[in-house]
Length: 254
Length: 254
DNA sequence: CGGTTATTTGAAATACGTCAATTCAAGTGG
DNA sequence: CCACTTGAATTGACGTATTTCAAATAACCG
Image (tube, rainbow over all chains, first blue to last red; front, side):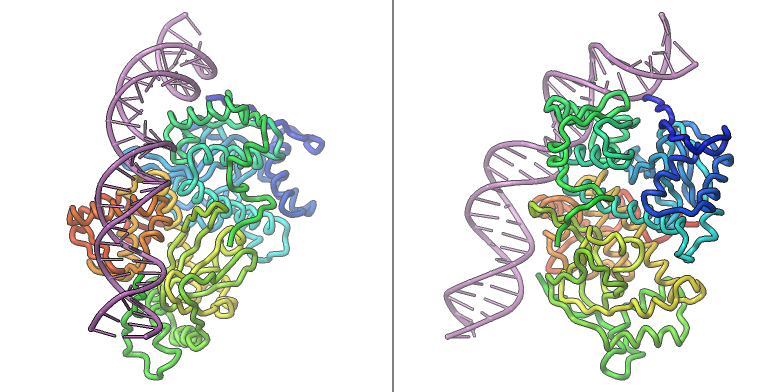
């Protein structure tokens, strides 16, 4: 599996080397949901130096212990459960700038684990978010809330995907979702996930996923190779996905 | 489908006819999570008279509108999404005494609808829960929180079920979950759901579900008939379910 | 480079879905 | 109480999506 390089940072802001620019993915994502005051930005920046690095495969948040709110600064992780016989279900992928361990799911512990998929850098944000509970005026709070809601909407999509889409549709929808979440919706974007990982997220076998990917490639819709996705036919991809991924416009049912 | 009679109420408390005993399923469920003060019980009772009845098939909570917190006093409902081509995914079933429209999912609106599966009686509890936000001492608040968490844990189970269990395992797990949620874990319990409904919850076709049910019946594990489930071999059922349903012993939480 | 982990492919087995009838249960109006 | 209607449960036959097994490349990692 490819160890993705950290995303290129937009470092007009970073002057000092350590603990400043590293927080950029997080700030960028928060800014999509709410305007932060200068003071809040500073608060977030101060998290940077306390970040901690974990290697791929590490369990960041395990069974019983509630570790509190965290943000991923670089690298990819996922929340998952593994059955006794080895079957695995991935609940959600966690991208740079996204968080885990807060919100609703946090306390439903013992039923999910958070695992690093690549090498990751993580900061503990529980102290940061402690103060802003329900004051509800702060941009930090609004941004966090929005992120939780989006995660939640994604989970609903995920259930529909798991239960009612075909493998082909699942795959298309997943790629579309990742395109949105990796930033812009650019035709090319990083997707440093193993086919086995994607399969475990979508509830299909690696072998079959591989065949679906080959089909999508043959049809010149999208090409997944060495950690990068290249969308050649966005329209066909969206059509195959059936659902519009959470976090954008959308039409919905009943 | 059989229109289930309202569950037999334990009416040592109800003296007056209207709006008192009707709230019993709700109180009973809350009591499982937290002790309520007399005043709180009274508050809940006062909801009774304002209950509203809806016929099977009605949409209780639709698209964009956030209707606020509600509790089901009698009858069964479900949260779901319907795709344009008619495919349906049920996210969760809602039993008497359970609620909807609060918690995390509430605001992820436009992505799910709540629909009555049988005739249901519903009360709006947003006013009731308005006051107790984060005061965090009240039993009402603790009970509500616990119900939200259990719902959340269930959703994780549901994802595993949809993605990684076989139809046989899905069915066994679902019945086991319903046995727990309908109250005690008694071998016989009401399950007023159409096979089509169960199929749409589990992500399998009606026809196939029917065959699985017949197999379970032939194996003398569990018998679903006319709205009632009879568990004959609890051990075999649990074994087939693979997962232990949320909300009980387990290794678990915090 | 040599060992390990991911991706790919073929062939065969199955689980599950679709189609189409039939039976069964419950409710309605006469 | 009996046609009659309607929706749900069942069943058979058949097609297909997806899994499993096994083996060959290909890509990566130190």
